[in-house]
Length: 374
Length: 234
Image (cartoon, rainbow over all chains, first blue to last red; front, top):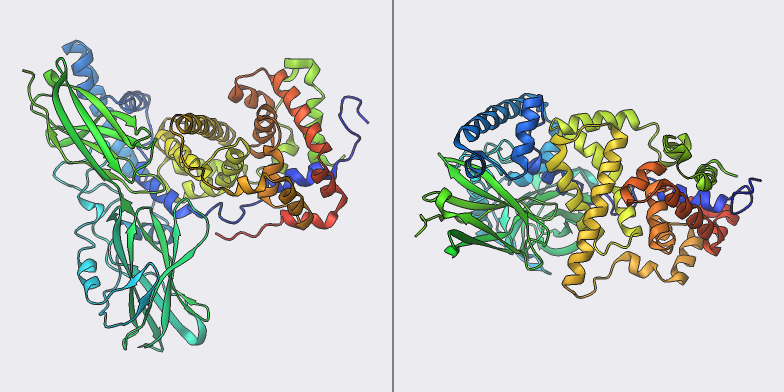
């Protein structure tokens, strides 16, 4: 026995304790996997490939931009620095594009259905619903139709997207509508599911549409339950149900969704759909008070359904490109503020982007025009 | 002594020699313990791919480390470990392009960020008292329930609750050493302490754990080991 040790050789209790602490994932520990992947896709930035690129990117990441240099350095130095940033950014962007491997289609498709792949359209002539989710008939058709037009496709990328609305790489509008895969259940029955719309505005409703089929025909009159898993919380719960129509269609509405969630339709006897993911977009608004602090303007940022500590980026329009100037975290009230220099930003439009997290998608504020100092 | 406990305890035997072995690598058993030895190459590859923007690479990293991160956060008393873990990964992803290093460096970086975010969250919470949110750990803090956990076969939550019962210094040191699989110098750097102080904390923490009737019961009840074989549900 080693006299330095606090107890005799052999401690299977500690051994067992440590093995448990380092064991594989327990229930619920990987529940937010899909949301984490969505967060990764929304926030991953180009890798540094060269020293110059690395330097430029690091500088940029500290919340700087060409404008920042203009504010801080002499004109000559600012110009040189701006060129470094621009070139570095270009190289990095290209490297990023090149470096992006062919996506693992199953993962991407599984996860990024929430970027707006609402799936097959169904006719809704069903009846009956219960619980938090409510059955919805024809109205869901309208929601489905709006799914693509309200996707994230028009949103500029967090750091330097085109103001005109060119999509970021991760939010392609070209997804073709397709229902989630339909696991085969009892007696060869299959149940598909699709979200009528994703992302949705936080506190909005989403319609989960499904179709129960057997041998190529719809199965009518079957009660289908809708289970929900909210990002950041363990487990599933049933939030609604509906009955299939003559064509096997069913639609269940989930009202007031404020957190990213996965949904699954369950028809019993082991028949269930694949998980459909829905991203929610918190509301974010900005208000500009010119000259609030001498020559500086106060830009107040308010959010709803975001969380304290979430990151927001202040962006300015530079020749049609949104460029990140600064970044801050939301305070306990879900708000924050930036002081702007009216002298340097006069005539420019600014906006604030709330970055995606596990619990919500990315959101962009209204735009505000910075007036010249008076 | 079993290999696992022996490795952890052997290190505490150097407590009196302070920094004599600061360069000593994490004992091999540490990695086998954490199940990372065989996965090191896989994780290194996943890290490289994630850094290049590959989602599958990130997924592999996240699946390997998210459970450990959540357990660590729970041990140090984080009120909302899921939220803090989310914040941690967000910062990791945002700064991944600036990261350079291997799998072990990444682990150290991840847990450092996680600890900082947990501290931030605790400060924010203290400034903004909120309604207490029930968590599994709150319930498990009840010693009777922990006993039940032990008798029924130790669950991860039960094990976490046992560690969380240590003093903050000891719990952090043991959690970073065991759950995160970091070596003592790395733990010392994260905690801002000397390696000697960390070894003392480890020594005392392990001694306290070993004296815990629940831990002793684990050793006396081989059938309790079945609890370590947790099913993967996600």
